[in-house]
Length: 402
Image (cartoon, rainbow, N blue to C red; front, side, top):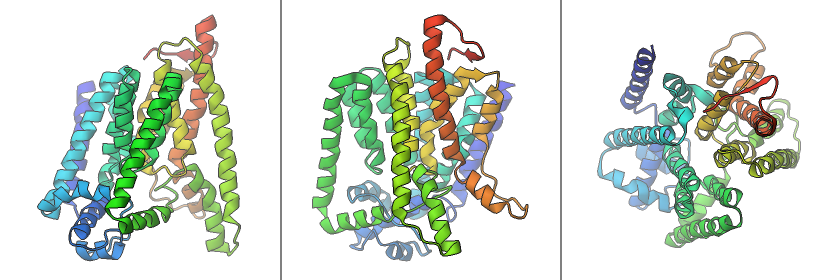
């Protein structure tokens, strides 16, 4: 049965990749921006102007290139081939990197050797974050490879390689840089050397990027500051808080100071970090065998809640921490319920009158709701683990070895 399930799942994944490859006019829209932004820069045009990119692409783009100028050089080798060839090569490279991530997961975390169930989870979890990244053509999968390599190096006591991997992962999106805090979190005072070393290294990259072309760097800052996605594209806490303010202004003409939203966000972040710190200290001072791995998983979940921007495909970061948790802990045997809840995917059509607002509020931020649920379960799980170590199994809760 496992072999049949694996074959069906593999056939589905291969079919999806082929479908994305065939329909190059519909998918990998982010890659289209990367390719034509690099072309614009190569011929002396502004790569940060969406109209310029649209003209080169011969179709409306509607999105801007939002990475610093050095990133343009990474995509320029693709200009040696036509767009369709580059499109297919990029998709193939993403599939290869995704396979490498899967192999890394299998090697480092025993729970990832769970066969078809784990792979089904990977395909569907968090509103199908992995397939969405393949369809969008974003750089997230490349980013995830270096993030998970950094975790591996940290767990194996190789902090320099950990630091380098985090800096490389942050090359396009600066947010992974916050993972450098895992250095002192896991290693203590020694980790601060690698935290500051990583920050200085990345700072030098930005300085070089600025010196290479100050005008382009200014355009990069402008485009990055203008990012304002919400809902299913960016199911983050800040976006969820800002949503009602924006909708009130658009639909009812009621304008509330947006500063209130940022104040609520700040208060929420303080609350999340305060509660998380208590659980972290309990775990840090314990003698649990896999505590460093659990700390890393817990920090990943916390980051998903506190970062001001956490795109839909960024939730790939939570796949392994979430699967580990729902396989390790069951409350009155509700593992099937937890598994199903995690793999539910957005409903695109719902025709019940008056339901659209509720559907949007629930499904657009479903990944975020799942992240909150996983966060709460980790807090409970840490407490149970400590009790288990001190006094044996706890009534009403079963712990599974993974």
